Figure 1 (cartoon, rainbow, N blue to C red):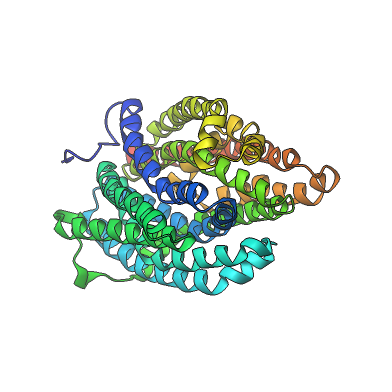
Figure 2 (tube, rainbow, N blue to C red):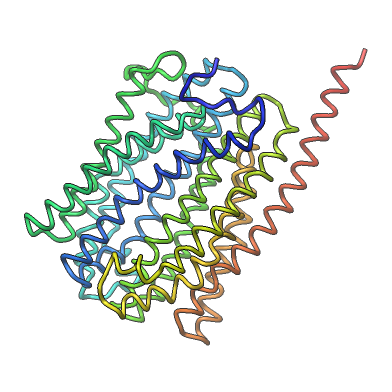
Length: 458
């Protein structure tokens, strides 16, 4: 029985359902991005370019460390989706309790790693001396919210795996409003700088986490969370991490390649860093909108794998690619066309705006390619293959960008020569993922035919 807030992923036409599944995730992602974007806007407007660059210089490192949490949440989503598709509610309930246990441990580990490693990592990136103290302060406060971030994201993964994408949105709207109000209060009224926006962000994160836990406690059936039953079962954790860790490692290595690019950008100075920071925040909205299609493809694929409805997987992938093409084309090119206005929200410095546009004309305008890459990865992970897309992505995107930095960029030391590495890497990786999908699909259909023949044998 499908509840009103859930979506039946294994029966009926998929296109409309995938769109309705994705829309709340898009809005959820927008509010999640607002945590960081409001920080940037308030800092840029009321504390100046130095503080803006100080926060901006942390973005690649924060994304690097958070990537592991996001990866594990993908493992939770696939695991839960397969159990729900197979109507195995006992294992689904166990997954809920193991997911929350993992969130507590992973969030706590990330808290200490983030605090201890913040300065050494920023120094390794070559963060300018005039902003590094501000960057360290922001990072140390930000990572105090790691347990809350883990609890919310893992809880949201559980809900999305059963087709409920609305409740995570409601929780983020509430905490997002709190974040905006506290940002303005701390910076404008109390005259705080980067520490004010960081404190506002972690308060909002804990609010969203508390709301998520309370909802799971009040849920009935296999989604009910009993605090006393939170546990870590070897087989469940192994199943989650088998999908989640490769996804997390991929995200980490992607972030490392972005850290190297950020390090290369740092040589151009404070104004370029600020412009790049503003552009990244705008592009974040485009990326997260496309990422919702990735999550939709992953969830629909995993449930149909659990239900053994393999014939629906091709259609899910093709429809995911079609949807993400429209989203990426409209939002990516639209963001670049409106770049002057959008960058002006973050800063009134014309030089910073110019440097931001230098990035957007290459990265934002071609972001569609990134969406195509992610959707193919979502299909592969939903089918239970996580290591293969990780290896392909690390080779086709990350390794390629690192080689680019140490070869092409050394010859053409311009911002443009750095940014062009993004679309080229997306094209190469997407082609490789599609080849992998075709091979796995053939293998899967062959196995299914053999099972059917065995069942019909006398």
